[in-house]
Image (cartoon, rainbow, N blue to C red; front, side, top):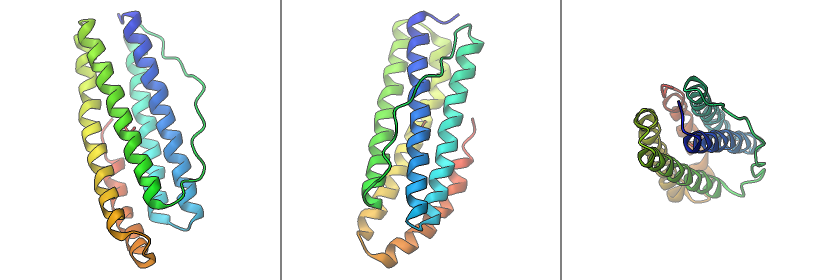
Length: 170
Ligand code: OFO
């Protein structure tokens, strides 16, 4: 049985994962309207992945006797300025999510809920991967700057990452 404090914190994480999915969906739409198919595919896949992160939490909460609450979500940005700004936003977002997961893990230790603590280790590992991937992309785009040819090649490169994102087990 979940302690109320844990249930509330997990529900908060459910909202964060759902909002992540919306943010990446909006990024996908922006990239698609700019003609960057590779980046768009990457973002659509990433959006799906975030939804899976959310669903995994939803199922866990309900299975442990809690009630997963599906809440209203904040609207994501619609314009991202440039690819550099967009990937910076993505990186900052993942850092925020990692902090939120860490806070959640901390609460489980305070409450001595070792089952939830164990369950959350998957998210801890996932955040390490997601931050590394975002940092990697950001480094590349910082090298390219505004060079059109470079951005074209970058778009193709990012397409290769789509499998990597969607292969993540949930
Ligand atoms: Fe759910 O990992 Fe990104 O946000």
